[in-house]
Length: 231
Image (tube, rainbow, N blue to C red):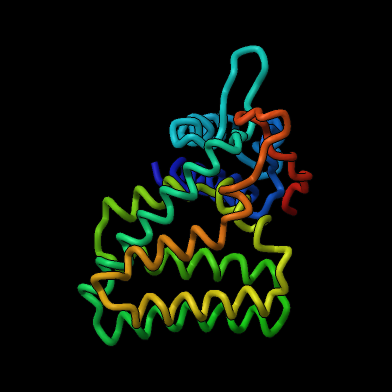
């Protein structure tokens, strides 16, 4: 029924938004009843969404312990960022092959949203515009399976890790970095553009990719992010 579907979508949007913004932190417990009460729904839609998010690898459900936001080891984070670099390079290659003037205008419009957010100093708006820019690139590849894989790889938790890494830079610097990235993917010869994208992400995330884990424990955990439930 439509009402049941609406409730399910409402719950999923709420939880994913909490993950994207860091209001739900890695290893943080998710309580069905709290979400159901907050959103004015029964536990059924909440349970349904949590099972779906577990299948997507965003949360873990453990009998007798409960439901928790999934955490990622440094090894997993490195692997994901390397995959993202290769996959986005492929998306850019497809995008450039098929690009129309309208596509370029769409991409520049996404960049302008970042510029506007940077001018206002609005970190939250900038974060969503940043996600929107990259998702626009994936969509413009016109490769549906590639878009789905990138969306799965760059889950809300991973986007939040990337945000935590870049937030130490001034917002204007972050915008200029993205402006340069857009110019690079639009002007680099097609035969070299995928490798250029890989190099860009390798340099951008080199502090994460080259990070040392204390005592040589490659499975070491990242520090937890403080939790602030969205209002």
